[in-house]
Each structure stands twice: as structure tokens, then as C-alpha cells.
Length: 124
Image (cartoon, rainbow, N blue to C red; front, side):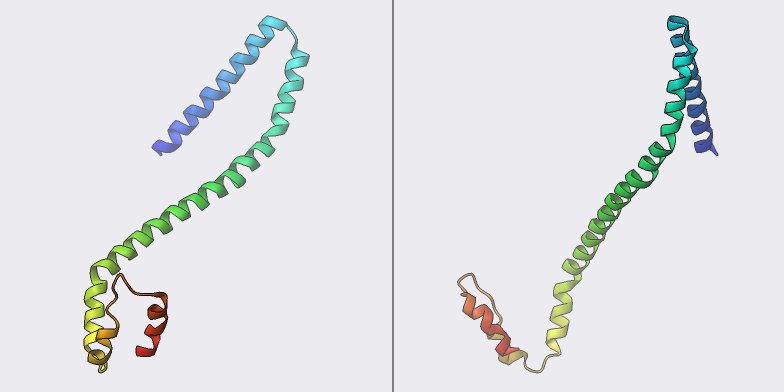
């Protein structure tokens, strides 16, 4: 209810400010015809403005929020696997009956060539 109250107060303040500006314009130029023409033009533009704000900008903000949520989710998944991944792989590899045979071929070093990386599948 508190959010609705400040929105109503802001709306009323903006309407009163608009009325004050129209009165100031009338006091300076004494031309109601000019005020009514532009007031009608401004009111006619309101549906287009609503479309721009609610549809397009909302969609852009929604996509941005979705991207931020996915990034956070990827960080959580990454931290989970970095914490439990090594232990889990160790547990699974202990159950492999061919572990002793392939262990020496799976130790990666800095001087490996591309061919050695390509040949790794024959040991699996």
C-alpha cells in the first residue's frame, strides 16, 4: 500500500505541475487555442508513449535481468563443480577397472602436442 501511495502522490504532483505550466503559458501569451492544440497533440501521443515504455523498454529490461540471473546461476554451478568435481572424479575413477592401465596416459603436461591430445581417446 505504501508503494501505491507514493505513486499516487507523484502522479498528482505531476498533474498539478502540468496545470501550473499551462496557467503560466496562458498568463504570458493569453492564447488558449494554442494551449488546446498542443494539449490534444500531447494526449494523442500518450498511447505511443505507453507502448514504447511498457512493451519495448520492459522487454529490454527483462532480457537484461534474465542474462544477469543466468550469469549468477552459472557462477553457482561453477563453484559447486569446482568444490565437488575433483572429489567426485576421484570417486568415479576408483570404480574404473582399467584405471591402472590408462592412468599414465592421462597425466597432462605442458609439453603435450596436439597429436597427444588427439590420441587420448584410444586409451579410454
